[in-house]
Image 1 (cartoon, rainbow, N blue to C red):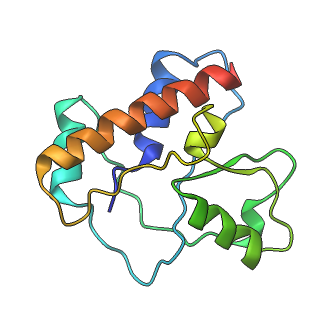
Image 2 (cartoon, rainbow, N blue to C red):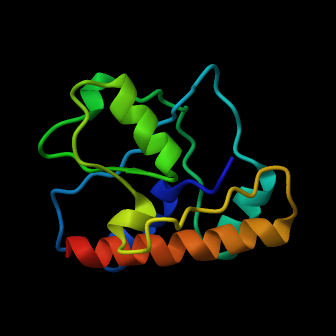
Image 3 (cartoon, one colour):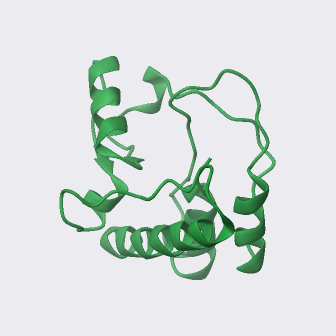
Length: 138
């Protein structure tokens, strides 16, 4: 499991985007079969940055998650394409990299099954992308 971007969004919200009081951040899963704990490496990397992982259960993405007032950010083009293929009402769906202004072929590194250094690199990449996306919203 990659480091949840929701944690980074919440951190930026409290540090940078306090003026955006009408924004809510939610995390959804593409496939949620059962509650699964966060990877201990992801927890450790977030803790090293004074970020606490949420203690909420995983939630499957559904048709109710789309609307004119909703922005959906995915980690990959494959996820974005799957959402558009599965949900007729899907709108405002972008990859995080796309929304942050990165090149089309840029994707978030998946550290699953790798060492702590890869989780740190993933965190750094996500933090940079979330910061870029947040600046675009501001």
